[in-house]
Image (tube, rainbow, N blue to C red; front, side, top):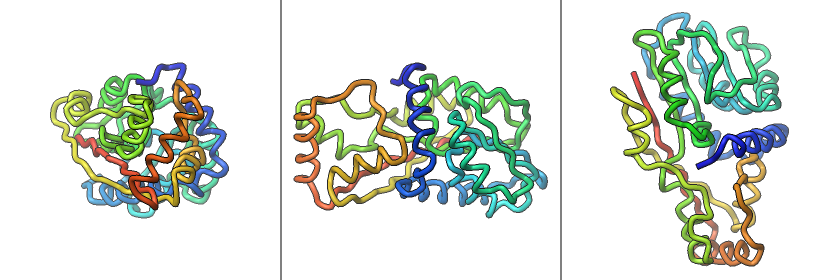
Length: 252
């Protein structure tokens, strides 16, 4: 699990990647589009107030606002000021949008909101359960929470290669459905949807993570171990396939 020191380092990496994030964020864009479709199916009231946690460059923000014409106000937030600025620039013409730099793990905003949503931010929080409780506490009566995060089978192919190279546990670890359900609390539900991304080779997979700022790890592998894991990943299948085990956390 990441520490609060780790989280600040992650925020710095994402901020540094803001200018070129979209070029590498292929699967992130697909997940944002899938969430926007889910949000469009909700029975939100006219003039709904929405809070988004971890907006990044605005992939979800743009997709959702295009599908939700009756939203009254949308507050997009991100811990990295450069990401928040990129989101603001992407949607500068939409009067419903306001953007703020904020640590979504402990949101300092006043509710209530008719919808709190977040795509692929929760997995970076040291206290994910506390964050979810805080988000639910910001909901208006009858409000909805919709969160996409990463589940236990994410990067299974890469973690298997790392284990084969003698570095078990070196890759990122994500929670199982039971843990997510416990964090989400009563009345919520967890659903799974897999997204598979293909890369020409292991190097391109790792470069894609670096391109979006998601290559942070508390410790670094010896170069020889990393090269061995890359060869094993490519030996399993080429082009390289990487699974994102996306878990939808829903409270309606």
